Image: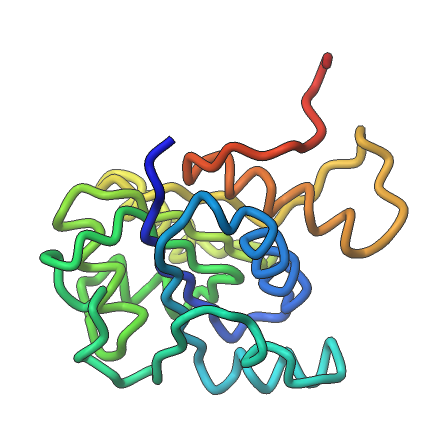
Length: 187
């Protein structure tokens, strides 16, 4: 299996548990990637601290970039990052991506991934959706992005918040092409 270079952006929506479980799982899959670039919004850091009670987001062994660092390698298609995951992804980020507004590193990287015809996976946690949200998600899907809402499943009988969140993040990692041991329907 070819090792991957991926970007993980953490948006300012509630749902920091999804980002944490995604980071934990990526650490477990270390042999499958050569680079993980991380960018977090200010609200993402605030929500992580509020919801999870710590600042452990900066303890992970990934390459961390500031939200306005347009010199980050994945701000250009020549760096060949193959996948970008935005988890959780706010409707504001979705709106800016759908409109082609690249005003920070997250939206610039998403624009690069789409223009290079690579894999963009967005994990919106907001609910309910307005017509504007749905139209923006439709537009991103038509441009090649994947919308994977943070809608956990229950057939694996998760018993902790982390296991419940993993039903979403494992699906995201499946979509990103990682080989992982997870609950599979009918197996």
